[in-house]
Image 1 (cartoon, helix red, strand yellow):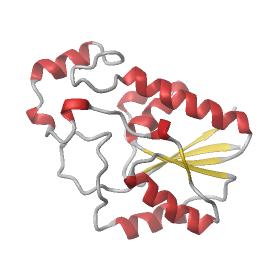
Image 2 (tube, one colour):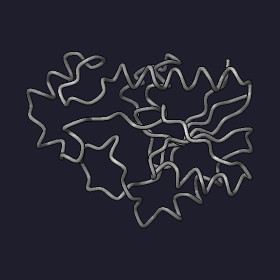
Image 3 (cartoon, helix red, strand yellow):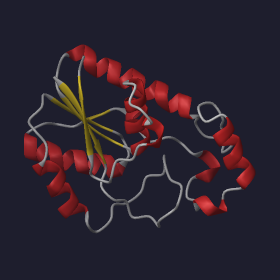
Image 4 (tube, one colour):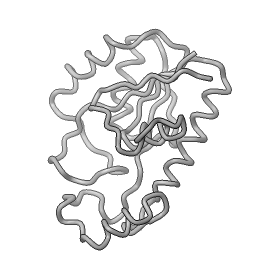
Length: 173
């Protein structure tokens, strides 16, 4: 049994813009990116997805290819960056970024969620999936993937990066 985490494909948003809970459209490259994702995926027992459109659309394509109905799990949504949503990272006040860096897990200078809140949501979801004993494809976001990797004690999990349409495979232990 394994857990396959899939990051959504490229969203239609300018580079270097903070987004998390914002529901973004997908880039024009979606079809090609989705085909590459599907080609690399094995058959599994269950398909779950974040409720955000950029994940749901990819999960629907994967579901069609693998004959699985995607199940929406709100715990898989990206972190809510509050007042930072849609703001270029360079325009976020330095003092707020410094406050976040000083207490990365718990600070909420943007008024949204803390990293710890995201971690707990992801932990809860993955624990439920593991209890089933079934293999899962989970279509989600970079922040959730980092949180799951942190749970599995992956070195530098919070600094790791998964490309748009990238996958991370984790055994269920």
